Image (cartoon, rainbow, N blue to C red; front, side, top):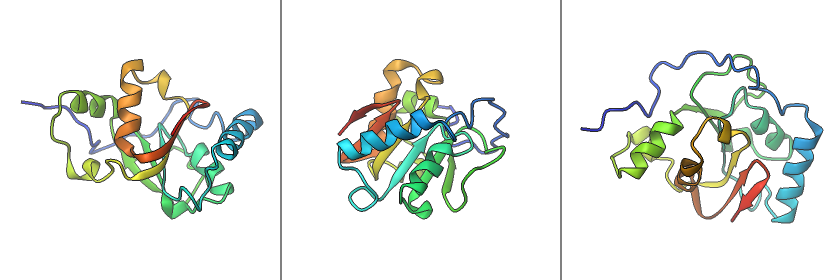
Length: 159
């Protein structure tokens, strides 16, 4: 029987020192803006956005500053933000490594996680490679992205 926690019932506080690494990083901001412009991704064409490994929400804040509505942004992390930099977004506490494991084994998912399957127009993942096995990253991204959705992964994009 499959018995790993995917939906984190009691997330702790995020103490990762890099949880806000990109908040004021002009190189990250410029890279995201260039990528969105290059692929014609904007809040009108791609309104629903999910940010994976959100930390305190710096990528969500950047995208909200670019015009995405906070209520259309979902932040996913294993922990609650210590000092959230954005208000009005949805937070979901999901163990993404365990999600990838369950997806590889074709195991049933909790309804609170299943509801996100193929629903987002934009998936952002700026530092997930630090926390996830390389083979699992595409599995996770494609779980959340709608068909034809846009995936921004540390400057690597897929549509």
